[in-house]
Amino acid sequence: MSSPANLLLADLASSGVKQIPTSYIRPISDRPNLSDVQISDVPIPLIDLHGLNGPNHSLIIKQISQACGNDGFFQVKNHGIPEEMIGEMWLNIVQVLEVLRNGKWIAVNPIPNTFIINIGDQMQVLSNDRYKSVLHRAVVNCNKERISIPTFYCPSKDAVIAPPKELIDDDHPAVYRDFTYGEYYERFWNRGLVKECCLDLFKASSDS
Image (cartoon, rainbow, N blue to C red; front, side, top):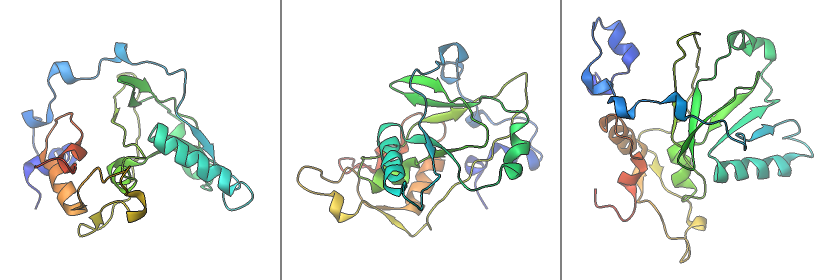
């Protein structure tokens, strides 16, 4: 069974806990200040997947690669999932997602019938830092309820996370040491509410 430190807040609520443990509460200075959130002049990339398996394949792959390298986030449309399957979720659309770009929190404008893709820490390691894993957060709205359905694509705990040898050379040495996903998972959940990137613990120059 997971230790209390590894439980999600929803799990604690269902277990009968009446008060939120202090380890789950950020100091006021670390909490989102909505007045500091900006609307970016350069929006999160929106990639049209129509034609991915046809004549537009190379162009779309290039757009995805650029988005992963420049932003670490992108939105996709024409993804093949019928609009009626996701339409109910968009009835009460609320702007809740924010990403950190150039040291500033940027609000992501939700576009109906699209999905937001975050490449995550594992892809940053696999690409040897060519792709970005971007700090992001979801904020609550006191006037409107929201529904978020995050889904994660994770390897087995025994999987070794490391870039392919083709991405390593004298000009591009390995940024991170090899590690298993299980090791990453344990360290991620044991780090609490610290703001530093978990990947810093796995840098090749780190002794931790």
